[in-house]
Image (cartoon, rainbow, N blue to C red; front, side, top):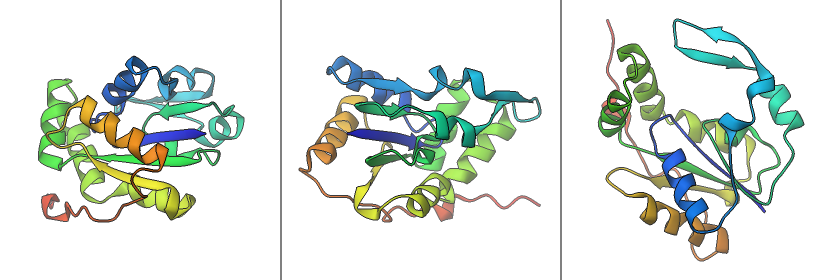
Length: 171
């Protein structure tokens, strides 16, 4: 079984992925696989431009977890965990990582608008999606919940988080 762990930058994907590795799971970090698919740099957004369609088409399925902010674009995922984080906490996490203010705003807005969840629901069977709020939670707690979902101890569940009140209207 291949499980994708996706979410807006800052929701805890890498940290939780590292915890799952400590527990003996195989975790593939998307950042380690996209090198051949980089087609440019978006200097304004401080981001690489990836040919995501080609990457997803050529990605070889693995037994374990695939972690990264576009893991949900892999059609071969058997299960998807969408990590969520309250936008005010997300902003603080990204600021600690020295993200640019515009990038922090962009990611907080994407989180408030449920962007990763919406894309996931559009492309995957709803009975294979689990939404996990990482706000104020540590990696061991989140890894426990993910393992419970994968084992079938807890059911698929999503759509209960509403952070639209955190949207900041820009003039």
